[in-house]
Amino acid sequence: MLKKGLVLSSLALLLAACGTGNSDSDSSGEVATSEGSTEQEEIVIKVASHLPPMTDIVEIAGDVIEEPYKVELVEVSDNIQYNEALLNDEVDANFAQHEPFMEKFNEERDGNLVALQTIYNPVVGFYSPVYDSIDEIEDGSEVALPSDSTNEARALAILEHYELLTLDPEVNKYEVTVENVTENPHDFTFTHIDLLNLTSAYEDGVELVFNYPTYIESIGLTTEDALLLEDEEDLTFALQLIAREDNQKSAEIQALLKAFTSQEVHDYLNELSEKGHLEPAFDPGE
Picture 1 (cartoon, rainbow, N blue to C red):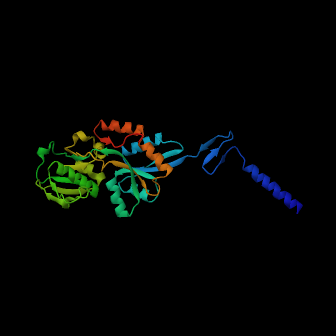
Picture 2: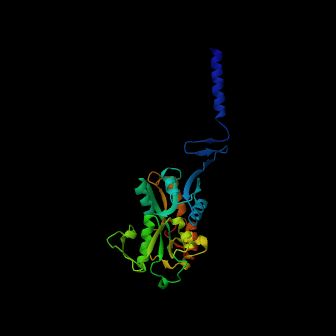
Picture 3: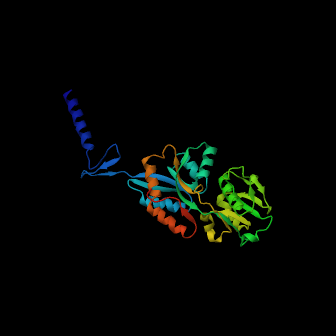
């Protein structure tokens, strides 16, 4: 019995010795060094996005986010994956859409996504490989509209603003479709195309093509080349930082939000604003 007791005592001392090295971690995630100082373990925040300048903004936010957080950009290839990834907890946030688009996704997928903050308002409009002015638009022209309902409504509102058609005033302007066109004096033919393929429609010669500056820039065009531009001062369609209901108030997301509304991001948006691509939709530091 005495020998067994000595063995157990020796084992206890050995285990205790193994637990006292040069560093240790406490329950808060801080690591204690041999000098007694502490440093926090890195916490990665995954943000899904798909194209510049959205991906650029994610990276700028990653450069300025406070420790111990690190932003990891998760690039996707379409306008479906970033919401599916967020809904399925594969990422912590996304930055690629406006609130009406998010709300439509929630409705269709029984989602719990929430819009946290407007970041910038893109200048959208119609481009034409055929016409140089609105006066040249001919009857029977084909008009390429985005296939998602929220951007379709936005595109139709631009056409109505330029008095190229009339929409049913009884229908919410953010929900109108081609079915709500009450007057079509130019006898337009409407074609619905995925947002990411609208630039190809322009290259294929479609007379009027709705597009974002982000996409049309890929073929060397800017808002200065647009035939029709949106005249919209509210921020309904401003791109937003999106999270989930269950994580929106977490320390990680609040740190991400602070980085997204930093002076550095605002300065970058101002540079793009000078080119006519967009307008910042927040005041830094607020």
